[in-house]
Every structure is written in structure tokens, then in C-alpha cells.
Image (tube, rainbow, N blue to C red; front, side, top):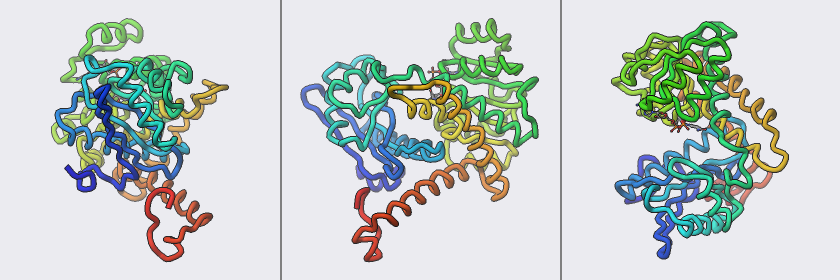
Length: 368
Ligand code: NAD
């Protein structure tokens, strides 16, 4: 296994393999880019089938965090960590304290938080060792899901504005796949704005709740993507937009919270060719990260939620530019994120030219 030849390797600044004999911790921390600030990104605990699979995941996810922070205008970099293990069987306070020691050793270049398989209690253990942690009982501004759903709702407004020239969601139909933390709040916000809902979830009680609270119409999980609607909102799984599903999508807009919605990058182009407007996942689902960026003493929820609503403007810019440049929205979002990082890098080097810069060489490493 070579980090540098992994397909997901994207000029990552630092990749740390962590092993603690006593607790059994096996983890990888990937810091993708800290140009805009310390790398913030959750820790995922998963029984990866191989070290290679874990490495690939952490490289891909950390890059996604860089792009999400950059396009959202946050002064944060992108990082992520993965613990190789089963979250139902392999957790212990010692394991998370060991993770805390590795995070601490990075001196604030990486800030850890929750992701799949990790709870607030786990992060509380990490906090016993290091301050470079978010989402703990002491610091947390609570569940980020309402913030994420709020951002998705505003992202839908942008999509409707761009595609249909409308300013209101009222009377539209939205098909929501997944009624978990984000999906249920999203249904609530949409219902309050007079949207008709079609929903699907593998959990029958969640479906029953949406029917009861919002008058939603339920369909099977197989049918939700092809339901005729104005917007399809994937709020469950990744890779839902692929060769098999795109031709049978029933809505002209895809706007939802799920991470990594495109099975492969080329599916952004396929959506565009099919005349479907795609709100890039890391742009529209950034609400949670934006809320977390406000965390700390004096947390002001209203201010944070207003900041999240700015996802509307970001997406209008993505859609407008994609149309002008005749390119997929996913590619334009990547380009916008990269441009912000490149501008920050140029500015930094203009103020602090290094010996390498002066000699006409590329600087090596973050602080070169
Ligand atoms: P969750 O686990 O609370 O909810 C997911 C829901 O999807 C569950 O109710 C589950 O039963 C349902 N589901 C699973 N398979 C399904 C299928 N085949 N068809 C229909 N429904 C299915 O997760 P969440 O926190 O609501 O997050 C949803 C998505 O949004 C995830 O992809 C997550 O990574 C992403 N996301 C969440 C946040 C956040 O703030 N929670 C932020 C950014 C991105």
C-alpha cells in the first residue's frame, strides 16, 4: 500500500497512521489542506475490511471537507480521521483518549469531531486529553441536523429560482429519500412552506411520523427516486446518482443532504446531459459545518442559522456559472473551492515569500 499512489490521494499535506498498543487503537488521520485554517473534520469508526479501504475513505473524506469549508467561505481547512473497528464492540475510554493524544500531537492542525459511529460521549473522552475537539458536551451547540436541513431548504429555493424562475416553494412537490435526523427536519421546513411531500424510508415508524405530521404520501424505497416531483432530495445514502438511477429520476432537480451523492465524478456530467439540475452535495449540506464554526462561548443560534441561509447565494453562483461555462455544477463547485484556496495561498506567499518562492521553486509543505 502506498499513500502517494492511492487514487484518492490529492496532494494531502499530512497522513498520520496511529497505533496504540494498550487500547488497540488503529486509526488514520488525514489533513488534506490547511491553507484557510485548521483542518476540521469528523472521526468515523467503521469495521473496514482492509487498511487500504480505510486509507481510501479518509483521503476522500478529508478532501471533501476542504472543499466544503472553502466554498462555504469558512476559514477552515479539511481533515478527517477513521478508526478501524466496530463501533458496537471495540469502543473504550482508553481508545478515545489514545486518539486524543494523537490529535494533540498535531498541535491544532487538525480538529476532530463526530462522524458515523461516533457519539458525543466519545468526543468527551477525547476532550480529556486535547482541546482540539468539537462537538463535545461542554462545547457543543447541539445536533447540527436542523442546521443542515435549513441549508438544504435554502438550497432548494436557489434551485427553483434558477430552474423555474420562482421565488417560492409553495405548491411544489418534493420527494424525500430518508427520514432520519436531516430528512425529518427538512420535511418540517418544507411542510411549513406549503410543499407537498412524497417520502420513503426503510424505517416504518419514520414514514408513519411524516405522514401524520406533514400529510406526506409514502412510497416504497424502490420507487422514491422515480416519483414524479419538482425536486428529489436524497437524505439517506451516498452514491445514489449512478448509471442505473439517473435515467429513471422523476424530478428535474436533485437537492438533498446525503454525502457523496455522485457514484463517480462523471455522473455530474450525466445529470447535466439529462437536463437535471444538481445541487452539489457538499455545497447544499454544509449547514451543519457552518453551525459548528459558530460554536463556543456566546453562541448565537439565529446568527448561525442566518449564515447557513447564505447557501442560497453560493448555489445561485454555482448554477449561474455552470450555465455560462456549459459545465456540470459539480465541476464548477470544485473549481470555486479550489480558486478560493489558491487565492489564499497566493496572498500568504505575497506577504511571506519563502526562500523557495524567491528562488522560483514550489514551497514544500504547509509552512515552507
Ligand atoms: P440518519 O442516519 O439519521 O438518517 C438516514 C435515514 O435514511 C434513516 O432514517 C434510514 O433509515 C434511512 N435510509 C437508509 N437506507 C435507506 C433507503 N435505502 N431508502 C430510504 N431511506 C433509507 O442520517 P442523517 O444525519 O439524517 O444524514 C442523512 C445524510 O445526510 C447522510 O448521508 C449524512 O452523511 C448526510 N449529512 C448529514 C449531516 C447532519 O447534520 N446530520 C450533515 C451533512 C451531511
